Amino acid sequence: MTPRAMELQEAAQRIMEQKPLFILDVRNPSDFKEWKLEGKGFTYLNIPYFELLDGVEDIVDRLPADQEVLVVCAKEGSSVMVADMLVEQGRKAAYLKGGMKAWSEHLVPVKIGDLKGGGELYQFLRYGKGCLSYMVISGNEGIVVDASRMTSLYIDFAAERGIQITHVIDTHLHADHISGGRRLAQETGASYWLPEEDAQEVTFAYHALTDGTVLPLGMQGTQVEAVYSPGHTIGSTSLIVDERYLLTGDILFIDSIGRPDLAGQAREWAQHLRSTLYERYQELAEALIVLPAHYMNVDELNEDGTVARSLGQLYRENHGLNLKDSDEFMSLVSQNLPAQPNSYEEIRQRNMGRLDAAPDREREMEIGPNRCAVRS
Image 1 (cartoon, helix red, strand yellow):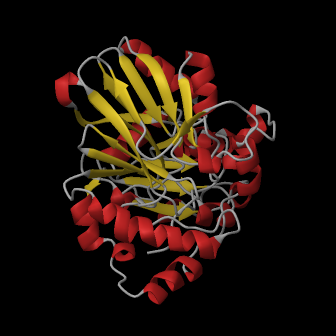
Image 2 (cartoon, helix red, strand yellow):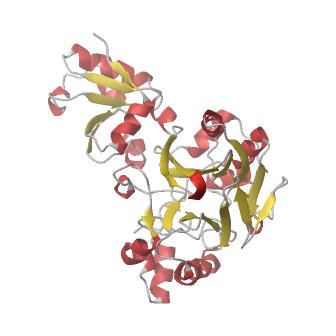
Image 3 (cartoon, rainbow, N blue to C red):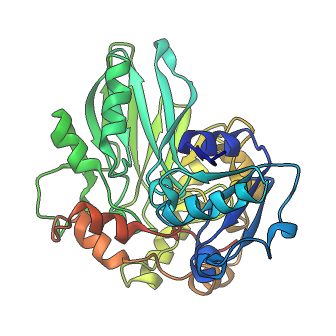
């Protein structure tokens, strides 16, 4: 008997359905502490692979006897060997196919809702990175927002539905992951949009996304409207879709708010952030459904696997939206910051077109969790 390979989609389904899973992570403790396969109801045991080279007899009693154990490592190889040893000990074991390397690149499309005139809005969840991207569909046209570098999935998804991707938008210049926006636009012939305030040093042509820009989509009257909302970056721009959804980029999350420090102008950008959250967003309808570009932890997932809340609910529950004192707000966004994203300056340079990187290097640059939010 041999251990089975757990496909990435099955692991994602466990997260979406909030099913229990016991994970034996055989990476180094520092890697496990920083970043792991997370889900509600998941339990963990972290034992480095090198401690198991002589066998798993010493840890078998620490593993559940009545459920399958999923062994996880960086690239799959070590987890296969450990899972084999567990099976030899009479335990039911599986290994994560492709390891955390593959998990970091896996995308899961989930339908958010219907639009006027028969359109649809999809959220693409990148569970291994906490990144969220979107496709707005109306008629036979589609707009992709904050695309990851795995562009083939968007292309295949659109092709399956007979959709032509006509516009690709980045809500801001990303610093925690490599944008696939420009690449996707080139591959599909779509127009690529980027806030002009974030594009001062880019080396490529783009369409300037400015406050009030309206992109019509399809023949049903669906519109995507840009709302200038600086703070995470100086160019950060939100999108209102169909007068119902608010795509906030990295300005507002479900349980936190965006950090303003990733370009070395924390004080100035923090003032912009406060103005966006406490003035500009306050003018918007509370019924708008907030759809961010990232989530921080699995508690932010809804029962259907989506990441979404109404703007009104966030104004009631999100701590970052309820700091009336300006000094208290400034303290939050300057002192409650996690470590900066891995290779964030290289990623910014890559997204500006000022740095070339091979696919393996791009993957290395992105390894680890996103860190775009202020701590709650």
